[in-house]
Amino acid sequence: MFSALRRPARPGPAEPFVPPSRAQIARLLRYLRPYRVQMAVALVALVISSALSLLFPWIMQNLVDAVFARGDAAELNRITLLLIGAFLFNSVFRFVEGYTLSYVGERVVVDLRRETYAHLHTLSVRFFADRRTGELLSRLASDVTLVRAALTNNLTAVLGQAVSFAGSLALMLALNWRLTLFILILAPLISVNAVLFGRRLRRLSTEVQDQTADSAAAAEEALAGVRTVKAFTREPYEVQRYTEQLQRALNAALRLTVVRSAFGAVIAFLGFASLAGVLWFGGREVLAGRLTPGALIAFLVYGINIAASLGAFTGLYAQLQEALGASRRVFELLDEVPEIRDAPGALALPPARGRVTFERVSFAYQTPAANGRQPEAAPAVLRDIELEIQPGEVLALVGPSGAGKTTLFNLIPRFYDPTEGRVLLDGHDLRALTLASLRGQIGIVPQETQLFSGTVRENLRYGKLEASEAELEAAARAANAAEFIEQLPQGYDTVVGERGVKLSGGQRQRIAIARAILKDPRLLLLDEATSSLDSESEKLVEEALDRLMVNRTTVIIAHRLSTVHRADRIAVLEAGRLIELGNHAELLARDGLYARLYRMQFRESVGSGPLA
Image (tube, rainbow, N blue to C red; front, top):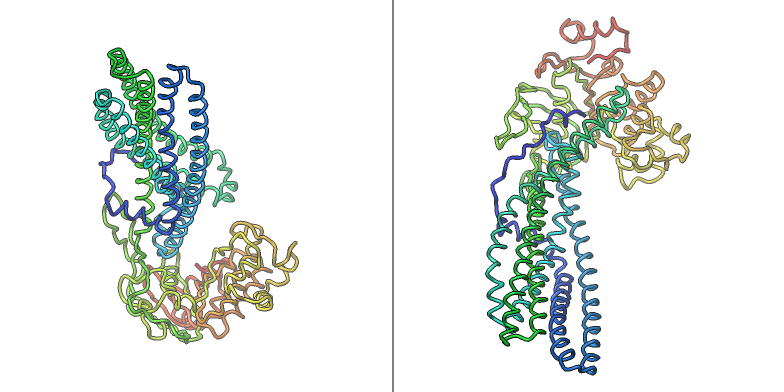
């Protein structure tokens, strides 16, 4: 829970500017490919509405030169009707554009989030161990939204401003080329400022996104551990910790705001300076008889259009930099290669007999990569494990904390691959089997039962999505869960709360066992957790486990002597090595580590204290 506190705030050194590559832009545009027709409709509507907007200055010119100068009331009526018609058509096309873009944008968000979320589920356990959930959620939420804006709103806005800019410039040249050249002198100044500010905006935008992700991670960790927070009365501490992270995010956002505001102010000044120049130079043209007053007014409006387009370009450029930074972060997730994945030509595991073999297995966790360095291997957690578990056998793993029991346990469903050696199931190297067929025949009942926030029925069906009502009830009875489920307010339709918070530990365990019964696995992996239950719950859970283990190869991380007594064999681990193997009586007779652990627990409380 306190990992966010241990991590220092992300540093904010200036990143070198990396212009978007063609590959990155092409990859972004790929998400628009399924909506080519809708985008074409939106673009046509946008071009037409932008072109219609160019009629207004021309109408103003005719109003001044043809109506006011000659006092022609009939021309005034015609111009007014033309103006109303232009605005009406413009509104219709803007509606088509806005609706179509919103439709495409929302679809793109769904597609990109679904792809990112689906890819996250292909990644290995180690990936999630090295990252915080809140940070990943930030990628799915805020970063994807920024990418959506770049692909739809920003893309079409750039095109619309380009039409307005090009059309205004062409009409200005037609009106008076001298005055047009005068305005264009300031264009390079605006372009240079856009590039310089854009680099700064991109770096600050990335920093804001990082700090926002850190804030989300800090909140997610504290809320996930709310019971611990309350037990230690650390609410003020967590609020202060979150406030400090929010302050860092706020400081980054304010720095971005300062640069963005300065950017807009500089561009606005340059734009209005251009208009002032137009008034001065254009006034001289009118006085010289080379330009009519109406043409000068039209010229000013076209000049405002150009200034507005340049200002919009700069704002869109800043937003594009934000979106490109966000897209890189999303693509980093999508480009993450699953460490554990199906090998080319992997075989589907036939119905397993359940023989599990460890051949000279060693394993070391990798430390996360930092500062661009490659991950480093930590000291070995398992060393030269040689072990064969027979079909239908119940094997208990015993040893002091840190001996490697959980790591050995996690190699069987291939959450990790051995650093050396291999693990086999019925003679098949696990790496030669498809993950779906392997894990489809393994049932896991963890020490910390993970329930989802839906109903009891939905949590049970996680073991078998197509299970019938009769199968659900039979599994619940076998797991000693039916009685308490039927006493819940809505029975099987009772919502259990996030992580099953509305249920007791024993109830959660029995639902987990029922879920495993529904799956009907050939191999059962059980991180036995009855040491934390009261006597009645423990008895009910143990009865359910006895039923679950029948005719199944079972590996148990044992915490209680009662479990060890029922095991066919006991594997004793110490410092990552398998140092003893045998049944309860044999190991007691050897008077080794197992005997010492047994006597230690026996002295505490015969049959009830924790063994490991």
